[in-house]
Image 1 (spheres, rainbow, N blue to C red):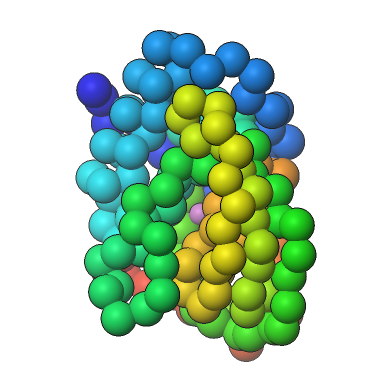
Image 2: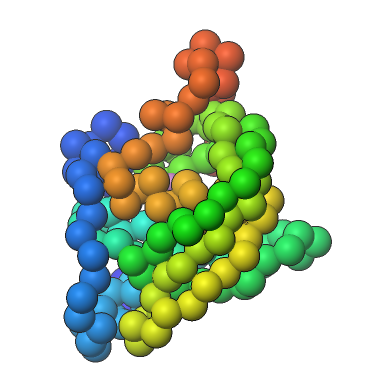
Amino acid sequence: MAVLEILKYPDPRLKEIALEVEVFDAALQSFIADLEQTMRAGPGGVGIAAPQVGRLQRIVIVDVSSKPKIKQHGRLVLINPEILEWEGMAKGREGCMSVPDFTGNVIRAKTIKLRAQDEQGEFHDYDMEGFEARAVQHEIDHLDGLLFLDRLVSRRNDLFARKVYK
Ligand code: NI
């Protein structure tokens, strides 16, 4: 396993649209292991998307289990994820390993119905809410070339500099 290099804004590769995964083989499993190790090596890493390490495939890992008091599914590998339904809107603070110097307030759906494949290509449906739903929406944005910076309502009021990534 290896910790991979995280691309940082404004790297143009972060603006690309990732392709569907069609082959679920050993090479994919090996990449997922590296991607997960990279997420866990980063500060505050509750999610990561393959394009953040320069691989343009629709692969996301989310694990918000470090926040035990919220409703969540634990470690999830989400391949070709698709939001089937969403409801509500909420503003919340987000950070990103590709944007280490800032956090920002972003409006996201409160609840989502998600369909995604796992490492073996099996389909699963998930009902998600709150912080987990926010994390998944943030990571799916990476698959479509979007950063939280692209979703700020106001650059003046919703973008915050930070000295130390927590
Ligand atoms: Ni991010």
